[in-house]
Amino acid sequence: QVRLVESGGGLVQAGESLRLSCAVSRSIVNVYAMGWFRQAPGKEREFVAGVSWNGDSTSYADSVKGRFAISRDNAKYTVDLQMNSLKPEDTAVYYCSAARGYRPTADINDYKDWGQGTQVTVSS
Image (cartoon, rainbow, N blue to C red; front, top):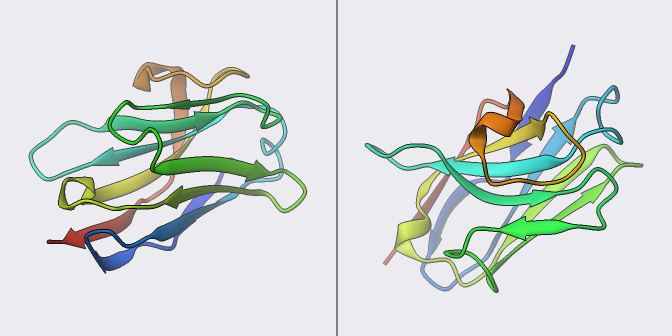
């Protein structure tokens, strides 16, 4: 059974940083690409960042490029999202997800397993 558990969300002020972490099931940790998505109230879930199965390739949404960094440590069964220079528009529930393939994509349909989400709130 695949299990993804996010942590690290919270309330911060604009310009501050947060680091999200996703604990990943041992069964998939070194097999599939992983991604972070977010969903703001009244909006659709959107891609934020993705990383390949071995960490050698990453992909980012234009809105977070240069501010966010995704990484994975398969030995520790974790996928992290470092978020810097946070903006109020980054406020959302952030979800960790396991892809169907080995390379990161921005297409939500390419992801098959989801965590329960962690709330990130950025005040102005």
